[in-house]
Length: 86
Image (cartoon, rainbow, N blue to C red; front, side):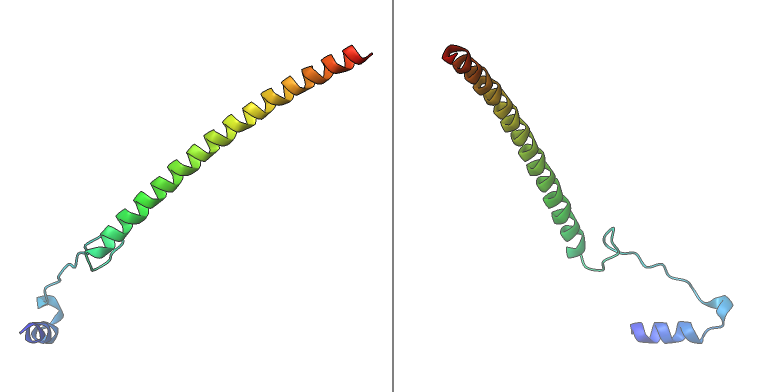
């Protein structure tokens, strides 16, 4: 039935043909409904990865700060040892 409508439409003169608009299901133009789910999954995965990287950066900054503090303590202790040994 659909083929007959298409073939009839193409046989009509140009000024009588009806234009039809085709819409896609997702923002990426996919024709399946799974495409929008894939985009959602990718977006959520990217957000989770970003959050994990932010947490790792904060932890790394905290550890670096602790290392600086320990180095200062070590330096003061070495200075005390050097002053006592003289």
